[in-house]
Amino acid sequence: MRSYSLIAPAKINLYLEILGDRGDGYHELAMILQSIDLADQIDIHAGTTESILVHCHHPQVPTDKSNLAYRAAALMAREFSDVFNNLGGVDITIKKRIPVAAGLAGGSTNAAAVLVGIDLLWNLGLTKSELEELGAQLGSDVPFCISGGTVIATGRGEKLSPLPSLDNIHLVLAKYKSLEISTPWAYKTYRQVFGSSYIQNTDDLLARAHAVHSDELVKAVLNKDAVEISQKMHNDLEKVVLAAYPKVLQLRELFASQSEVLGTMMSGSGPSVFAIVESQAQGEIVKQKIRAAIPDEDLELFVTKTITNGIQISQ
Ligand SMILES: C[C@](O)(CO)[C@H](O)COP(=O)(O)OP(=O)(O)OC[C@H]1O[C@@H](n2ccc(N)nc2=O)[C@H](O)[C@@H]1O
Ligand SMILES: Nc1ncnc2c1ncn2[C@@H]1O[C@H](COP(=O)(O)OP(=O)(O)OP(=O)(O)O)[C@@H](O)[C@H]1O
Image 1 (cartoon, rainbow, N blue to C red):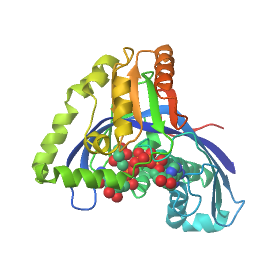
Image 2 (image 1 turned 135 degrees about the vertical axis):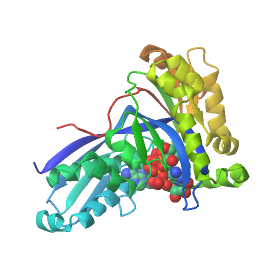
Image 3 (image 1 turned 180 degrees about the horizontal axis):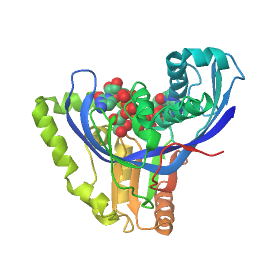
Image 4 (image 1 turned 120 degrees about the horizontal axis):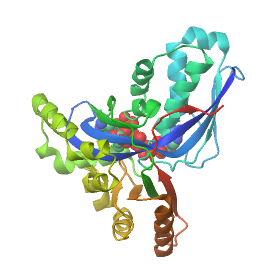
């Protein structure tokens, strides 16, 4: 087949603990990552061009070499240069639905879709772990985005231990369109504020990571208990982002004050905030209440839910 259409889901962080500064520009993390059914569509065509072309109408998404989807295709072209030279380039169209620079891994999931799509287009037969290794060269969230689901992620986010899948947990997700938060800024600020409390010893790091694995949140996930999950969620980056962005704090407090909301948390480095609710109907009610309280068109609201998969072929 000379073209593929792929569905690339966003993620949320049910848990994000910063264990230490690795000294290589990254932080040692313990996270629980979760795919949600808010997704972009990535169409990939082979051989219509000699190089790599990216199309996307979203005003905040670049179409040049800085696009993560472009970088994924360039990586494949370098790794498999014989096939690339034989078959010609790739033409990538991104239909963006995931809010940009939101802490939802929008660029990362696009890159993961391009890796999966080119593997299929060029008949490479790469394994999941080979795709994940390539993904890790592009960004910490990319390996997770390939298979998605519910996963404990450690290291800088690329070491993955799947948990039993957690589907149909209903969520309301909110993001101010004009508010973008840089991931490097969030980690750098955290390091500046909390640097002295870091654990530098590898044994300590491993002990902490192990503690997280047996944490109550993991038990709540294993029990698929939305109420328990809502109570045990945690994100260290909230400490710096909520302090610097009052609108994000206000959104989180507004969600927390709704009687239908079981729990609320910022995703990743923000600024998107999600709230767990018991059903889609309750999600619609919360969405209406938030919209009534903040009638600003800049605020995007989605009723969504957890899903069990990462990148999927849609045709
Ligand atoms: C915030 C999260 O989205 C949570 O899932 C991720 O930790 C970030 O994942 P990502 O956007 O794929 O991040 P990358 O592209 O790998 O890194 C962007 C920047 O974030 C910081 N970064 C990222 C991951 C990590 N474990 N420690 C870091 O300090 C670094 O400054 C890095 O240069
Ligand atoms: N394919 C892409 N989709 C979205 N943004 C992209 C893409 N490629 C590059 N970018 C740029 O990357 C920046 C971060 O966008 P992205 O949506 O990936 O952030 P994010 O969801 O916060 O990522 P993460 O959760 O992995 O930290 C934006 O400023 C955007 O211009």
